[in-house]
Amino acid sequence: MRRYFIILLIVASLVYGCSVETERNITKVSFLGDSILLLGSPDSTILSKFLLQDEDYTFPFNNLMSMSVILEPPAIYHCFFLEQVETNKQIYYIKIDDGIKYNWIPSYDSLLYDLSLDFVKTEMAGCTLKNRLTGKNEFIKPDNALKWSSKYEKIPSMRKCSAYYDSICLQCNDAAELTDFYNNSLFFQNKSFVCENAKKQLLDELIGITQLLYVEYFFDLEFDFEDYINIINGNDNINDRKIIKVNDFQSFKDVLTDCSIHIKNSEVHYRKEHIYNDVERYYSKYLLNMNKNNLNYLLNCADDIKQYFNKNTTVYYNIRPYYDIRLFFFNIKYDENNKITITKNYYNKEYITTTRIRVW
Image 1: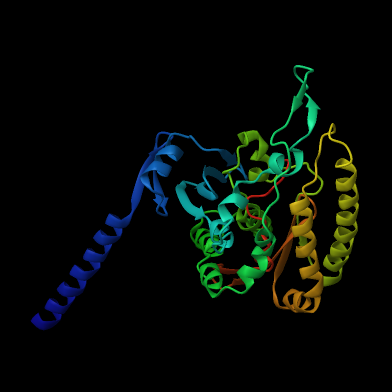
Image 2: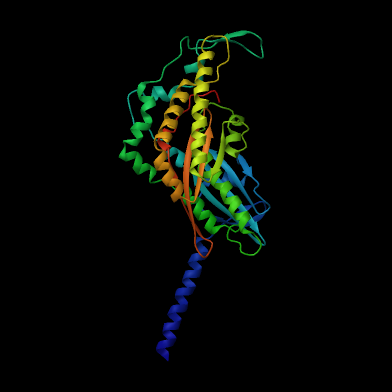
C-alpha cells in the first residue's frame, strides 16, 4: 500500500510540475487595458510598436479578428492577429519574410550597379518635361539613359542552376506560419457558432494576403508610403495588379494567351514613348523583357503546370504591372480535429524581377 502511495505521489508531483512549467511559458501582454495571451515570438522592438498601436496597416476582418501589419525593410511583414471569441482573447504573431529568400541573387561583378538602377535612370533620363507645379521645363538627369548589364536579365537562369538557391527556398516557411496560426486560432478552431464557410472564406483571404501579395514586394525603394499601401492591403484599383483563384487549367492557359497579346501591345506603346523626349514615359524595357521571358517560361511548361493543377487543392495567380504573372499552388489538408497543413509551391519564383525598374 505504501508503495502505491509513493507512486501516486511521484505522478502527482510530475503533473504539478508540468502545469507550473506550462504557466511559465505563457506570455501575457497589456494591450488596450487588458492582459492578453500572446502566442508567437516577436522581438521586443516590434512588439512594442504593436502595443503602442504604431502599425502600418490593420485589417478589420470581422468582429472577432483583426490583423495589424508592421513593415520592416526590405521585405518583412510582422503580422499580429488580435482575436476575441466569446470571453477568450489572444494575440498571435507571425513573421512573413519568404520574399527575401525568393529574391536571392548570385553575386556577379556589376550586381551593385544593376540594383542601383531605377525607372528615371533607365527610361526618363535625358527627357525635358514641364513641372506640373511650377509650369517650368525641367531636364531629367543623367543625360543618357543607363543600361543594365546582360547578367541582370539572366538572373532567372542563374537561380534555376543554383543548388544554393534551392536550399534557400526550402527554408521558406510562411505557409507553415499561417498553418500554425490557423491551428491555434480562436476563430478558426471555434466549433460552436463560427460557420465553416466563414472559416474557408477568411482562410482564402489570408492566403491571398500573406502568401501572394507579401511574397515579393520590397520597401527599400524611395517611395512614399501611399505609393505601396494599396499593395499591402490588397485593394489596389490598378487593372493589371490583382489576385485570382482558378479552378481549371484551361482558364489559366487562356489568361497566358491574353497576357501575351497585352505584352506585345505594351511593347508598341514603349516604342512610341521613346520617339520624343518631351513626353511622360510609363513603360520599362527591363520589365517588359523579363515579363515576356516569364510568360514564355509558363507557356513552355504548360504540360507540367497542368499536372500541378490536378494534384493541388487550390491554385492562385497574381498579376502585377506589365502582365507579370505569379503562379502559386497550395495543398490544404484537414484532419478530423479541424487542424490543417498548408504546403505552397511558388512555381515561377526564379523570375521575380528584383528591385523593379518601374514608374511606381
